[in-house]
Length: 144
Image 1 (cartoon, rainbow, N blue to C red):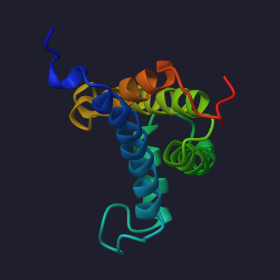
Image 2: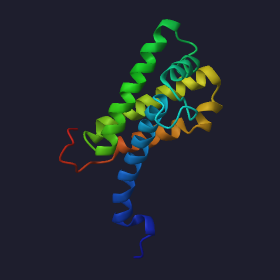
Image 3: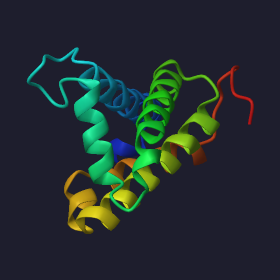
Image 4: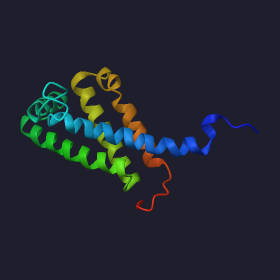
């Protein structure tokens, strides 16, 4: 029986690290932007601009919660981004990533309408993270 190219074990082995690294890099790139590491006029450019954007995305939240939400998102993205890239506790890190992205997408939908998180592929990224969480791991660091 002839196998399709995507049925080969090499493709399956490559898909999981690709998804982990892509999601992890996206989280870390966002952090780099909010601290100006991509440049002052690229992305957020600085943390104050990120806090303003956090307020817009979470327009339904009380103003006093916004700095906490900005820092909580930053810490979560840092921990999850590093965890995804190095592959430690893959299942829990991927599940946390899926949940964080889902909450971000819901907040965007509430504040800007459903088109916004769809245009930015937030739910797609959340679904990819959920698929990573459901994938059986053979990592010695896995503690599922």
